[in-house]
Length: 245
Image 1 (cartoon, rainbow, N blue to C red):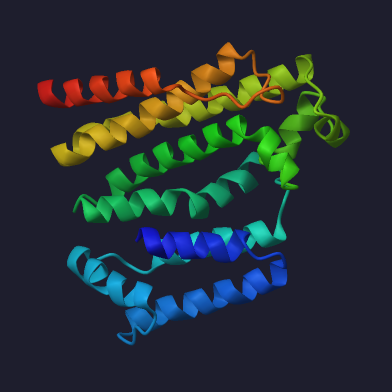
Image 2: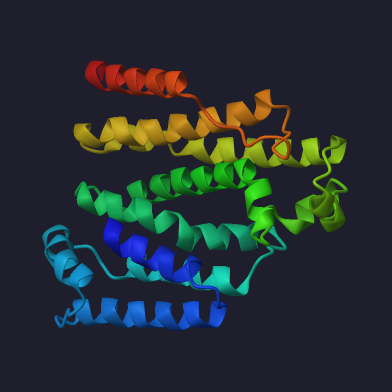
């Protein structure tokens, strides 16, 4: 599964020409469809086959990831929150659904909770990586929100840190936190070996958001991250809570 995603990501981001990337992503989807038709030829899909069969993973989450990669070739701005969330539905949520299949825990309720966590993690990453994304020509904050808080594209270009930007990012950080916390019940709905991982995803995302807050939302000056000691604390805490559940 990782190899499939890694190849798709490289086909999307490592080629200089977006049109060539789109052609290669189409080819990758053809390989995927061949695998589900029982005609795998590429080594990645030959290796992926037993996993798909053993865990009964449908084709749709794999396809959705490719839709997101294609969208990145065509779209660099998101006018509304709904538009951005529709991107997350394909770029983030399928990964969580695949994990649920691997845990033999995929059902409608768990899928909704997983989507909340995955979307929350991606929104947190968008807040963390405003500067990096803009260098790549992309803005993953809803433009309607930017206008609401009075932050223009010219401000992005000049990397302006002001009250408008702080209030804008505060709103986006709060939104990401709400998604993450809403997905927390999933932790107790999956097999015990997976609980630590899911809790780490959630708490790691929340820690990133806290780091942004501690930096007073100035992600232009420095990309907020969590240090090794904080990561160790998160791991020990998640492990301990899994033991006492």
